[in-house]
Structures are given as C-alpha cells and as structure tokens.
Length: 66
Image 1: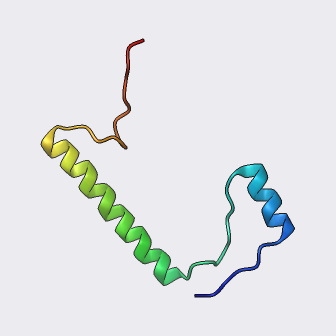
Image 2: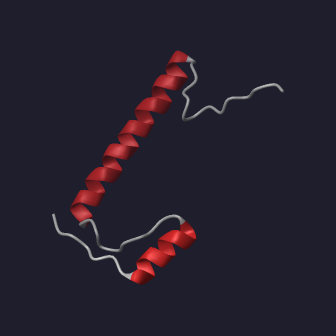
C-alpha cells in the first residue's frame, strides 16, 4: 500500500471542512469492489428491515416525546 504525504493545504482543508478528499488514493478496481459491497450490505439491511417489519437504528430515527 502506498503512502501519501499530507501538505499544509490538505491539513487546513481538513480543519476547515472536517473531511478531506484525496483523488486517486484508491485504484478504480478496489473502488468498484467497495461500492458493490456497500450496495449489497445496504440492500440486505433494508430488505431484512422491510421483510421483518422491524426498525434499524441506522435507518429509523428515534422519536422521543419531551
């Protein structure tokens, strides 16, 4: 795995925005595999939630009466 040097500009952007994008940090083949895995995981969670008629903490916000 290659390492990336972090410039002062990158650090400033991270401090300002709270995130940092690094173009070409991951090759396209790996990125495609990660997207496929994420899509499958999401479909399974949503499918199971709908099939079981249950809630999922990451999909269903909690409503609390005050």
